Amino acid sequence: MNQFIKNTALSLGFDACGIAEAGFLAEDAAFMRSWIDAGNHGEMNYLARNFEKRTDPRILVPGCKSVVVVLMNYYPAGKQQPLAPQIAKYAYSAIDYHAVLKEKLTALEQKITTTYGAECVSHNHQHLFVDSAPVLERRWAERGGLGWIGKHTQLINPTFGSYTFIGILMLNIETMYDSPVVPRCGTCTRCIDACPTHALTAGTLDARRCISYLTIESKNDIPAEFLDKLSNCAIGCDICADVCPWNKKWAKPNSTAELLPAEDMLQWDKQTWLHLSEKEFNTTFRQSAIKRAGFQKLKDNIQSL
Ligand code: B12
Ligand code: SF4
Ligand code: SF4
Image 1 (cartoon, rainbow, N blue to C red):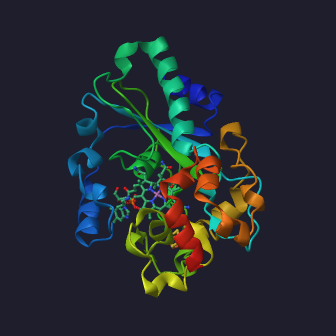
Image 2 (image 1 turned 120 degrees about the vertical axis):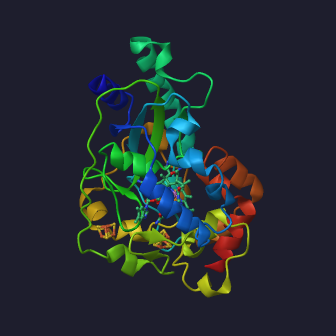
């Protein structure tokens, strides 16, 4: 079954798949408690909620025995002009990655239940997740043998690097499990050294200082202390990932048709971004992850650069 699930995931367009045994993440729970208590999550109050569910998928999805993790490479073939306000690569695609991964995960679930029976999944609980649920996705990816969590706190896959989306499918059946990959950051500290806002310390992120948080998640104005450190980032930030030797060496353009960039966006210069009307924003980015930040936030961010 392990091999069936992996082969099916690859045939559906995922780039990697691993499976971990569901269980309580004791060390992560302790770490996360202190991370939250120190306020590192900023205004992302949802991270402090559902603590038990977040640290044990068997509480989130009663009956869950196995965590299937899929990766999708999103490293783009084309890039923006370097002087244009930078949109992080995860948000290049015209179609929001949540929708792309969920559709393929649903297809994977269907093939599994058709082959092994409807009881493989819990029909009374949501069991398919991309980003938005209390699931420590990177840790499950690591446990499923798909890579290690680098010092920039992102999952690094030894074949694709860290520009990968993570999707999760919880199964109510047991199967063979994969072994975690040994972390390979070694003595490197390039991501920590490159972070313009000093958001990273060895293996931990202070989200309140992270440009990704400041330009997307935070509802407040960007604090003055960070305004000269935004490094031309308008939505999200890829600086710590861009300097990582694993990405420099292994990141390769994705071949997923659904992740093609929103039209013309890569050619826009700063003036085009500045003159973008709300109507144009809603049309161009109607299905894109950029919509999450919102028109006004995008405009304010660009004005700050
Ligand atoms: C909240 C969130 C953010 C926040 C906070 C980021 C963060 N590092 O936590 C902000 C807005 C800053 C953010 C930014 C980004 N994000 Co984000 N984000 C999430 C989200 C929704 C939750 C993450 C979370 O639970 N954070 C809480 C902290 C405590 O968890 P953690 O850092 O994973 O730490 C855990 C372990 O690493 C471990 N741990 C860490 N240190 C230590 C130390 C010890 C001693 C121990 C025992 C354990 C331990 O314990 C923790 C609990 O398990 C996930 C989706 C999901 N549901 O998982 C996406 C997710 C992590 N984000 C993603 C992406 C792509 C990004 C960005 C690259 C986007 C961008 N370009 O701007 C940046 C990267 C910034 C960075 N350096 O991490 C991807 C990452 C894919 C990958 N290959 O890793 C995810 C998985 C979404 C997805 N489904 O694809 N994100
Ligand atoms: S995403 Fe940018 S601001 Fe956030 S930790 Fe990485 S380099 Fe620092
Ligand atoms: S830059 Fe170096 S320390 Fe940071 S994640 Fe990559 S290999 Fe690890």
